[in-house]
Image 1 (cartoon, one colour):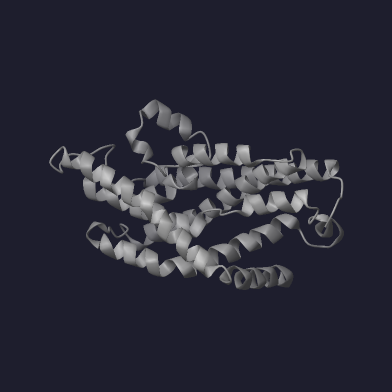
Image 2: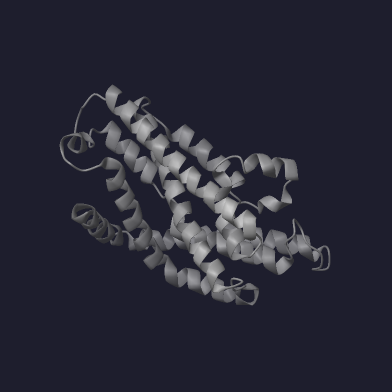
Length: 268
């Protein structure tokens, strides 16, 4: 355990060297967010600000996108899949085949340290952004709901990481995996609720998407915070999200084992 805590500590310090990069990335990430807020304000403005779309009022819709920004800061995978693929191509994983360090847990620790550093750097601009839209801020229904939201947030981060890790394992077979990563990212962006709440979709299509892990990468924890899922639906959703994390973890392990069998140790 101490060795992995050391990895988190070293990774955190290394990530702080790129604090300007994190700050810039955070600021530029607000540009598409402002565009979406302007779009929905125009849509609701056409109806005189009244009515709802997919069960969202105008203030709820704007707050939804504020939560998207918050959840992204805590859970998004940034370049971890690229770095893992580079480790495989360049032979840097050789040391993990010879030493008592599990590469998956090593990368997970680096992911945690990266998120901690990113949260630290993004806290101020994110707070300013939320302050500018404070009139749309909605507190969680109760303390219990907020606690469940935090638990779901952890599962969301794990799910995103394990899926990215498994995708990066393709580097054992392919020299360049950027196309697959971009395809996965594009589908995640649509199916996880980044672009719009999944409630605006036809119920049949929404049901199909909920048979995949993607809504649990963003949409589901936001629904918890906003109190749009409760009771049996909440319990079932949490169990499903946990099961997807287990499946993604198992698939990541499977891809590693199969990849190592094919791997030829060059470089590193």
